[in-house]
Image 1 (cartoon, rainbow, N blue to C red):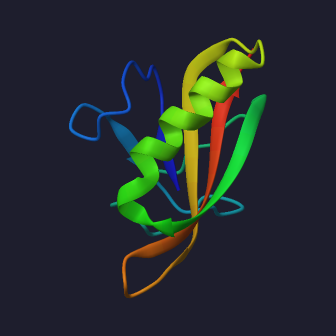
Image 2 (image 1 turned 120 degrees about the vertical axis):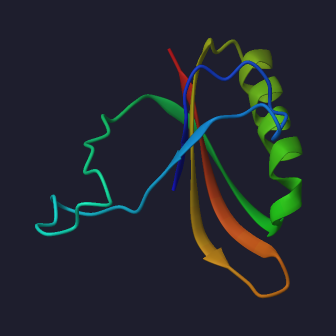
Length: 99
């Protein structure tokens, strides 16, 4: 899972992301990882099945569609990679934060 906050651009060179794995609780004895609870948030979602390299464009399209439908974007987004194939294709759920 990638978590993006305060997104100003979908340029992969300028994004800062937190990378994590969903777990139910903190794991004792794993000091190199930080456990963080992520609050639920209101979002519009889209599932992308295709090349990982297309994700920036897919994000742009999702944001444009959300704005066109009257939503206000919060600048938060999450990408859940459900499946990653050897050929570079992914099944990814994009969650774009809205008010």
